[in-house]
Structure formats: C-alpha cells, structure tokens
Length: 381
Image (cartoon, rainbow, N blue to C red; front, side, top):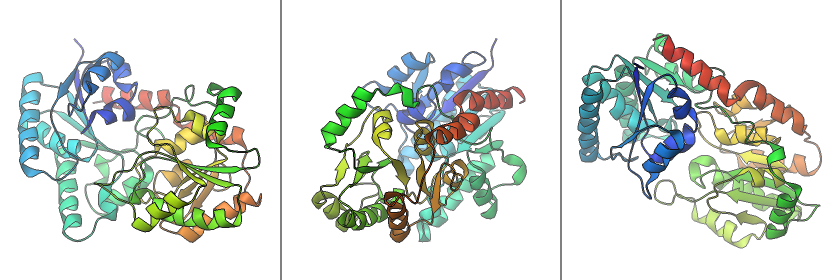
C-alpha cells in the first residue's frame, strides 16, 4: 500500500494554483489527500476532479482569528489522528502554523513546511513580534523546512527562526516550477495578440510595460504608478498594463495612487484574468517592484514567454533574474529607480534577447525538475 501524504494550504486557490499538477503527479507514489478551506463555488470539488485526489475542507482564515484558529487546529488534529499520514506537507503561513502544530500533536512522523515568502519582513511593532513568534512555532513543530528561494534561507537563519540542518531548497528554488510547454510564446497566435492590442488601442510604436499580480502596496504598486505617471508625461507611447485585482481590505493602495490610475489614460487595468499569457505576449517588459516574495511565479512565467523583467532586489526575484541577461534589478520602494529603468528601455539603452529570457527559465525551473526533486526528498524519508 502507498504511504499517505496530506498536502495542506490555507485557501483552495493555493492548492489549484501554487501546486497545480503536483498533487496528481505525487498520487502515483502516495495516497494524497488535499486539505484547505472550503472556498466558494465548489472550489475543492473542482480541484478533486482536476488533480484526481480527494479533498477535505477545514475553514482557515488568512487573518489573525484566535477562536477560528483553535477550531481549525482541533479539526486538523482529529483528521491527522484518523488518517495517520506518513507525511503532512503544508504551504502558506496559516496552514503552516496550524498544520505543523496539529501534526506534531497527532504524532505525524514527517512534518514538512514550504516557505514561499515572509509577510513579517514588512511588519513592525507588536505585529512583528507576534509574527516572529508564530514563525518560530511553525518551524519548531516541523521536521523539515523548505524555503523556496536561497534568499529566504538567509533571512530565516538571520532571524534565528530555526537551525540550518532543518532547511533545504528543493531543486533550484520555486514551489512548483513552471510548465514551460504551457507558458510558451507559441501558445499565443498573432491574431490573438492583434485582437488584444486593438482592445487596448495599442499602436505599433507603443512600449508596453506589464505588471501581473495583486494590486496592493506590498507589490510596489504605489511606487510603480508614481514612476509611470512621470514617464508617461515625457513619452506618449509609454503604456502600463496592470493585470490583477485590488485587495482593499488587506493591503490598500494610497489615495494618490488611485487618483493617478483614474486620471492617466495610459494606465490600463484588466482586473482578474484566468490566462495571463496573451498579456505577456503583447508586452515589452514585465515590471515587478515587489517588497517581498518567496519565489515569484509571475517572473518565471514572463521569462518562459520570452519576456525580460525589471524586478526589485529581493529573494526569489534576484535569483531568477541575472542582471543584464534576462532583466535588470532595482532597489525596493524606489520610484526613481523604476522611472530610470523605464526611461532606459524607452531610449533603447536596455535590450534583451527573448530567446535567452526563455532559455534561462526552461533550463532551471521546468516544472518536472521541481517535482522530481521533491519526490526524491519524500522517498528519502
């Protein structure tokens, strides 16, 4: 009989997006059970059908909710005692803390947690103290911690969250790698690209900067908008395409930023989209000025589509991008640095080869490479 593996995330979107395809792959070698909040619109049922593994709903929140967290902890403990898994592997902060603690209390022999970013990096005061404490509890309960970037390993050791022997980066980084057959320039036809350009009224002389992700402060959107507003007043052919939704409750943008977005006709927002490939295909460069990341899929996706990136000097981003080869790296929270790189691109001073941008992703971050490395890790336990 195959050993039992329970994978757990806080919300279903992480199961379907962060681990897409991985659950199905692992089900060849393990009895896989996927656990997450129930979500809406039959999210877990859709994952069950797509990945071919059973799912189990336990309501978890992304915020600090002590009563709900205790209820979820008890439910996880009960589930683990009943299922008796060989491995519990958690992703995302809340699922990590509750999952690792419940797994330890339930006597699960192998308790694994993947770190894909540290929200505490931007926190201060009492919130920082609380997040530091929670992080240490998660690591103490886990038997192995997998930072999905080498830079995260350095941050974890710097803050003394755990010992070096508990830490390991799988393959070259990333939680799930990139399906480079899916994210390929060949997957978007010339007709589709022209249709999209017509929708946004882009001309052949336009230079299109694209951002893909949540439109929140932590992604550097405030600085990006200020920089672009300045550059667009100097160059009418500069366009900024924002592909993503706002999260006004968790991380709102400044009022000044929202006003610029409303009044600058060269800033266009698509809202949430299910397929980002066409937007990469019509852009000239990805701009991703995030404050913190684990190992950003967006930068890998853009590269696989042959698109260079302007990224901030943070872990993950500064591992995917090699300065001057498949993009360029700037300081965080620096609108002038963003403006300067945009100006360089518009003047033709920044040039990148699309084929090299793609090759640097396919050679290092192809999805199967990450899956095989993780499987090997499981099988060594």
